[in-house]
Length: 380
Length: 251
Image (cartoon, rainbow over all chains, first blue to last red; front, side):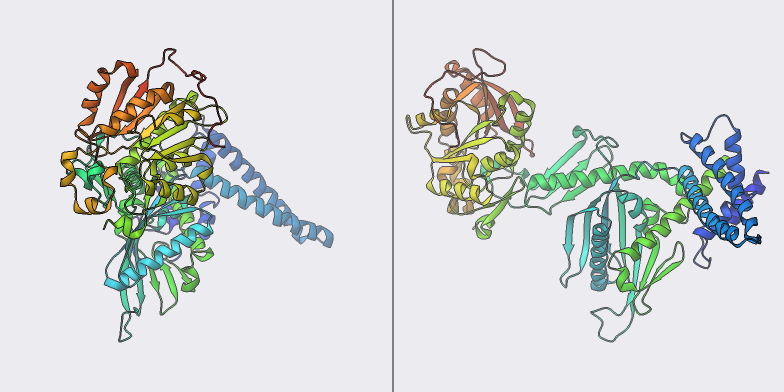
């Protein structure tokens, strides 16, 4: 019984358990979602079970059961109303059509609600995050691309009305960017940005190229959730703070402008540095911010690695070395390899507005879907 | 030439301040002095009266770094900033205007080592706090300072006399006469001073000053002192002896 249901679940996914390359067709997104709600399918079975059982799945069990019941009722209503479409009376037919449209809307909402209730929310969903960009393979061209991606995210943050603060910025000689990091905060910031982590690949004729050949370069994006004061408590005694003024009497005796600060978290050996600001105090604050993000990230790794191990859409350090997206300028196309979705109009995409947002939402839907499948298959 | 003079400006506690030779360039350690004062003020709300925050005297304001960062982070506070150097007076005044803080600060030329010169400070009423980063370099260490310091910064802003204590002693001697009961003094000093000052205070019971705490800087050196005037009443200070009544700072 269990294996039969599992096979159904897998069929719904249209996937093989291992992470396979992009030959798959749209295996994530609304059509599959519809399949998920298919009559007699695993989700239905699961919801029926929930209604029947005494010890419920989770805190929001009652809401889930209520939504499932309502869904059943609405679908019944829909079926009955659909019969009226064949009625002789034209007025009645028109009435039926209107009823059907509003019924379908409600059904869609209920399904959405059920999914939201089922998909487990993560500790980090409400977190702010630190965005890190680093140029990869490709020399100056990679650094130019890194700068464009950083700008894209900066504009995306503005588009989403998030707060964006550059923490570090190491430019290259010709206007590119070697490495930069920024703190991003706001409603659901981490929840949306978390799928941007990974290797982004660009294919185009570089500015530096004299013979008009297309090159492939890469850059890496890392997304680190930023813990609140409560999620992560660091004991000041566990920290060693290094500064450049260590030698001599310090104070009035010295005038050094090197205000670089480096913090070592002794128990774990994690190091964080900042030399961006003139003020030592500011550098210390920034270094602490990054340290907290790194430590939190490590703490999360343990928890999420089991949960995410089989997924297409990876989060955290697992996803960091995966090639997730290609930006092909000659073909004016951005392709995300995880959901095999392509967006055309690269220039608009890179403005970090609605085109990027749509892609992010698609990724989110897919991740929710995978989450959901896992929840169901775990409970069967 | 120090970079800060070349650029003509530098940051301190999040503020951008104009820098000009020979006025002393704020050191990073001093940011922690300000942090400590802010922490203490936050913990002792009785220090600030309802309508106007702590009344603070800064001795040796230099570019105005300490005074202005306190003013900007304590919106109800008022500061009297004094310095022996004319250039420092001008620069503090200029920085105050740049930051639109001129209404809450009085910048006064004053040499605290000169006898009786401070008496008119009594006009502003009893102080909640005295803050200072006084010249504290031991005289014998002066010639070992880096050339860029010796050539460009005012030596009077650095040289603290034989044991680097000259100005410190004057500040500690006059503070009890200006402070409210339980008013505080916050000093930045040489790492050798906490001990020296501790013993010096014990030999001067007439000052009614207690060394309350020593704090280390980010390099782990004892750098900052919190000294409190022990009042006869103790606890939260009521206003002290009437004294010469006059206008409160500022006008």
